[in-house]
Image 1 (tube, rainbow, N blue to C red):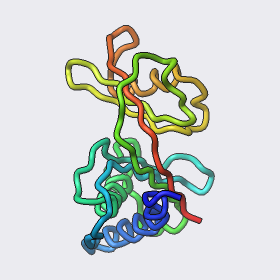
Image 2: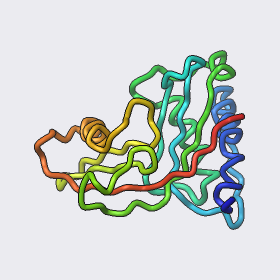
Image 3: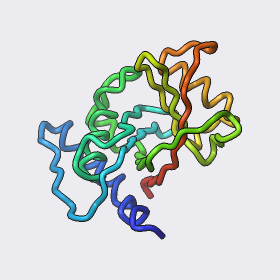
Image 4: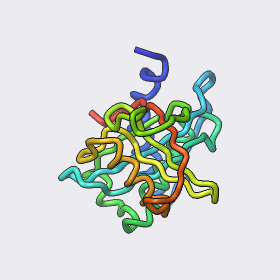
Amino acid sequence: MSALEQLSRDLPALARRAIAAHLSGERPSAAAHPGAPAAGVFVTLRNPDGSLRGCIGSIAPVEHDVFAETARSAVLAATRDPRFPPVRPDELPRLSIEVSVLAPDEPVSGLSDLDPEHYGVIVSDGAGRRGLLLPGIDGVDDAASQVAIARQKAGIGAGEPVRLSRFRVTKAKEA
């Protein structure tokens, strides 16, 4: 098990504590963790039936380490995902939390370099639009579908030229 995999086991509980603190009017604490790497992080919230309740994160780190990045993304996923109303305090105990720590992305030449089960994808255009889709999403079985969804998220049309890059994630789910 890599050092990042060991560190990431603690991240879902940290995300839950950060959301709970925010919902109760407290400021989530983000104590420094010496030696912890900085990385992009996405926090995914799911309803008891497995449906999406919120997902927000960053491709590149905004905070000084993955712990602070997780706390930040958790609060944003619970309160700022434009697809959903903010999470209510009474709702939080029923939600499950998954944290995805992103490895640096690498450019690819085409769909044949992608695998939606193992790699996330980033599509970008020359106008600054960018869309990301994490790997391992139910119902996304091929690279073409993965890229189409990421294009849609970025507002990039099917015929517009894009640059593709892929990345791996280290995922941690609550037990």
